[in-house]
Each structure stands twice: as C-alpha cells, then as structure tokens.
Amino acid sequence: MTTVSYQINSKRRVSAGVMALAGCLLTGTLSVAHAITPTDSVPTATVNYGDLDLSTQDGALTLYRRIAAAAREVCPDEGSRNLAAFARSKACQAEAIARAVSDSHIPQLAAVYAARSKHG
Image (cartoon, rainbow, N blue to C red):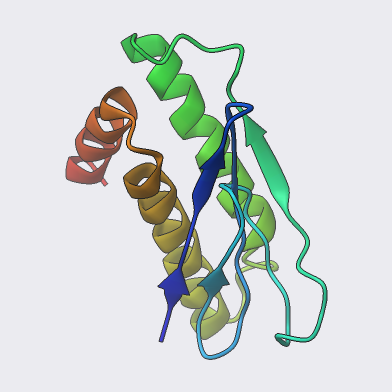
C-alpha cells in the first residue's frame, strides 16, 4: 500500500518524501525521499520554484521536470536488473509525481501533468 502526503510552504518550495514499507510513503513538502524503515531518517530532495513563472506553460513544464528529477533521485531503480525492484521504483516515482502535482494546486502544472500522462 502506498500513501502520499505533501504540503507547500510559504517560501514557494515544494518537497515530497518517499518511504519504502510495502511500497512507498511520501511525506514532506514536495521534496522526494526514500528510506528502508520508518525509523530511518528520510532524505529529501527539495524542489524550488520561486524563480519560475507558473502562469506560463514553460514555467509549469520546468517545475514538472524538476519534480520528476527529484522523484528519480529518491526512488532510484538501482540498475534495473531486478524487474520487481524496477517496477517498484517506477511506481514510486509515478506516485510521487502525481501527488506532488495534485497537492500543489497549480493549474498550469496540472495541465502539463495531464498532457504528459496521456503520452506516457
């Protein structure tokens, strides 16, 4: 089971945290994190977007790319030789991105995500 939660702070920063239990557990503010057990500290990758104009397609696309890169950092596929681990990594990344977009409440980012989701 995977559960994800995000929050956006007032400094225009988003972080997403991801913990592996049976899947991934995301916590934070839209930084992406991964840990073996719930007692381990959760490393995070913060995605800053204060430099972006999120009312534009380009700004939203840049933020989407930053979120996706952060998700890949904290949900690595570790060489992808193990198919099950690779699948878990991709599912973790997809969930992290989906939740970050959903919880951001940024319409342009949601539009970019929807367009990307249609094309794989």
